[in-house]
Amino acid sequence: MPSILTKAIIENAVIISAVESKALVNRAIKIHNLSPVAAAALGRALTMAALMGKELKNEDDYLTATINGGGPLGTITVCADGKGRVKGTVSNPVVETTLRPDGHLDVGSAVGRDGAITVIKDLGLKQPYVGTSKIISGEIASDFAYYYATSEQQPCGVTLGVGLQKGRCKSAGGVFVQVMPNCPEDLLYRLETVMYAMDEMSYQFDGSTAEQVIKRFFGEFNPVFTETQVVKYKCNCGKRKINNVVKGLGKQEAQSIIDELGQIEICCHFCGKKYTYGQEEIDKMFK
Ligand SMILES: [Zn+2]
Image (cartoon, rainbow, N blue to C red; front, side, top):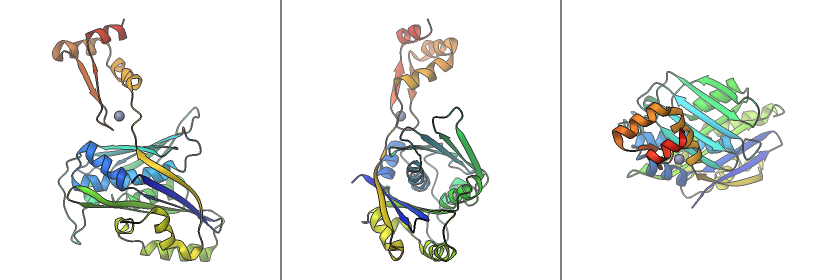
C-alpha cells in the first residue's frame, strides 16, 4: 500500500492535512538499517516532511529540514518536493534504544534538546527561504509546531506517530492542523480540545487511511476534503549531481584517492546508491 496524504478544510478557516506513512518509514528502515529509536525519529521527521511538502506552492519547489538536538542520533535531515517525493537520513542510524518510564521509545533523548530545527525552502526565487527555531522537546512533532509558531508565525498543531514491531514499522502517520487568521475563537477552542486528545498516533493509523483518521477526529466539524496525494520515498540523486561532488574534491584530491584505492566510490546518504569513478572518468572530468 502506498502512503497517501489527504487534505481537508473546516469552515474555510482551518486546514487539516493527514498522511498515512507506514510504507515511507519502512523504506527508510530498509535503506538505512535503522535501530528502533532511529526509525521512530527519522520516521516522524519523514512524515512531517511529507506534510510540509504538500504546502509548497509549485511541484518543483523543494524543502530541506534539519533537526539537530545535540543527542546521539546526530543530525536528522529530511527533504520533500511538491510532488509527494520524500527522502531522509540520520547521522547515526544505529543509536541504542532506551525506553521512557512509560515504556515508549525515548525519542526526545536520542534526538536531544539542545539545538535547532532549520528549514530551507527553495521556491525557485533568487534566494532560498531559511527559517529556524530552537528544539524544545526532541520529540519532533512539538518541535515542528514550535517552529511554525515562532519562525513562520503560523499557529498550528502537529502530531506524529511511528509504531514498530520486530524492527519493522507496523503503522505510522501524522496530522498537521493549520489555523488561518480568520478562525473564530470558539472553533479554535474546540479544535484544541480535539488535538489535545490525539494521542498514540501510530495506533490511529493502524489499518486506517488518512481520510478515516481526519473523519474520526474532526468529523463533528464537517471537514470538506480537498486533495489527496501519493507520497513516496524517492531520492533525486543522479550522476550529474554526484559529478559535482567529485569535481568539488579538486583534481589533486581526486587523483590521490584513485592512486590509493583504484577508484572513487561515492554512496548517496539518502538512498544508498553507489557511484564509482575510475581513472579514465577522472581524467575526462579534470582535463
Ligand atoms: Zn540517492
